[in-house]
Image 1: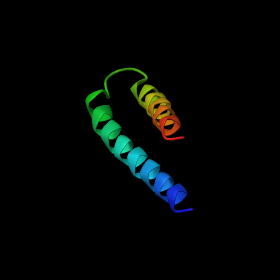
Image 2: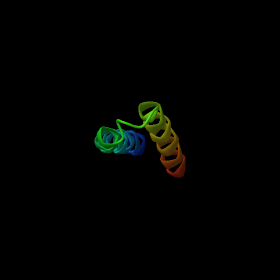
Image 3: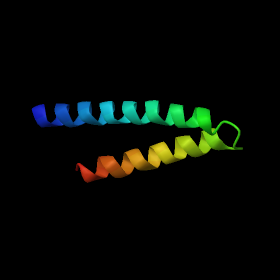
Image 4: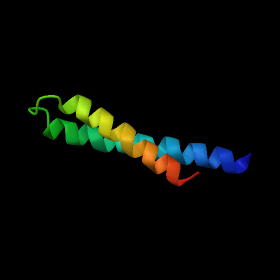
Length: 55
C-alpha cells in the first residue's frame, strides 16, 4: 500500500513538473502553428514512457 501511494505521488509530482516546464516552452513556441497540440502529445507520450519504466 505504501509503495503504491509513493509511486502515485511521485508520478503526480513528475507530471506536474513536466507541465510547468512545457508551459514555459510553449511560451517560446507560441508562433509555431500547432505548438499547443504538439506539446500536449509529447507530454502524454513522455509521461507514459516514464510511468512504464516504474512498473
